[in-house]
Image (cartoon, rainbow, N blue to C red; front, side, top):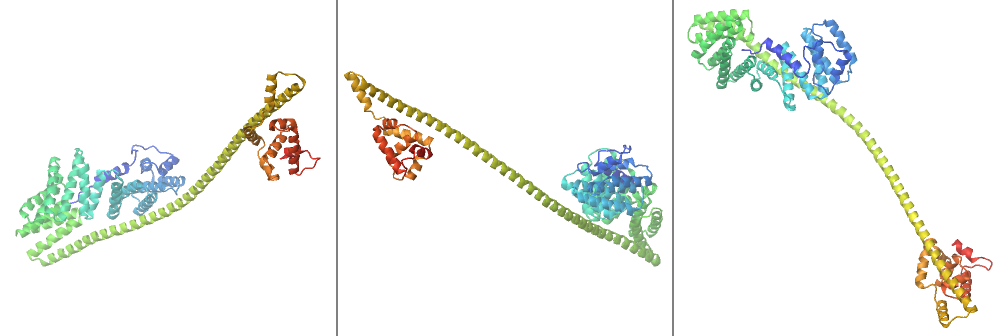
Length: 580
């Protein structure tokens, strides 16, 4: 027997619409169009941002004005924004679904919303939209689409770790029971039972119905022990809840289970109980189905007349509350009863009717499964196409971003390279300046030392000349004469003095001796000394004193140096040496 009720469906749809939003339906104040467009376009927002708010604001509004409002909202938003397109179309689908307009129009909004959701590649948004659309499809009786959307939403939520409510699991369980996908139906019904830990009456009632559903699924798969366990559990809960209607429903299901096991003596009182109670509560379809099972048992017991009465009453009850599944069962029972009574015409009539109903129902189930497969295939193709387009778009964006990044990187490298060259050049300039400063300091120090050295020699030379002059004009003691003689015999410039002198001279006049040798390759050491002292513009007497030779020797050495340099008598050797 079916376990889904209209009220349960409406509550489920309402809950699904609210579960991903932070707004409540009590908000009926209209928001500006720009504010709505902004909320519908938001990427970093709840999945159904703005949708519930808009639907709440449009409650009891004239549909023609709502159409204009949606058109204005569409113009205000950016149609290139898939989040906006998805949520706007979903809001329109929900609103027009509630106003009972053409299903084709609503379905068009649903398709646009889902396609736009896939374009965003946002699993959370895709799941939320699929839950909403699946609920609407179930309400319409479009079980194939309801199955596709709800299962897809559940699989996404389980993959990304988002919590699924018991109401959502319950919706899938109801859908899968109708499509006879028994194993999956059991899986999701158990999920409801696991989540429903609340002891409230409605929660316990929901768990009870899921136990009943699982029992019926096991019965379909001929696993009678499991079916009996779950139906017994459901019955205990129905008794605890003091729910007579569900006690009746579960009794009927138990009776059918025992009938399948050929335990007719146990099945009959359970089926009779369901018949009487369901009939008393106006559940004529359920009563007719249980009664036809009782008729079959009576027929097996040889009570043909009772079976005939019960089949006729079952047909009458079914007409008051039509149900094609129950009608095929009654027709089968009627066929067997009339055959047993020898009424071949009536037996043939109901046999034909049974075959027609059975084939139609089975064909509908097969077509439904085929349609589900077709829808899944089409949906998969659409998803693959959308993902391929997104990949191409992402590849183009990645390529563009790569080129931009490459340009930025090259620019940064160039800037860093130029800055490094500048720093290197600046460092070189600073180093050269410091070296120049150091060199200038060394030259200044060398000049000072050479000047002191030369001045010291000149002073010594002058002292000797003064002493010599005094020696020629005065009379000295024997001791004084020996001292003067010793001073006169001192060599003012030793080899060590020369080396120190040469070092100082090279710092002041770098390359002098090298250039001198370039002009006179075989120049002697004495000639080099003469050239250096001449370059210092010292007099012949000063040079003679420094070198410890006579003025005449100085003159001769100078003349020899002049010849070496190929100078005529009129050329001043001092000027020539100054230029070297």
